Image (cartoon, rainbow, N blue to C red; front, side, top):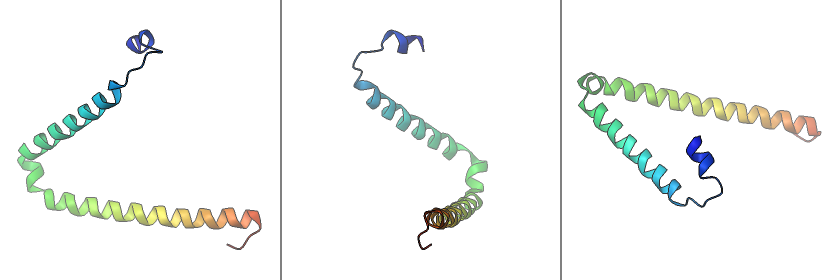
Length: 81
């Protein structure tokens, strides 16, 4: 916060690129760490199935909620749902 306060009002165009590079580096090192862990690698098939299930259920929930919200908004406007 102190650095941000001292540098306010200056153009810091490099910050976006630096943040992007740091995020990519963190993701890379996370992948290296996970790849070295034998417990994670032995259960990768279960993790993949759980990730697939969670993704599909998240998608279904989003679609259903969006559809219900769309119908509710249209019914309040007096239009056809």
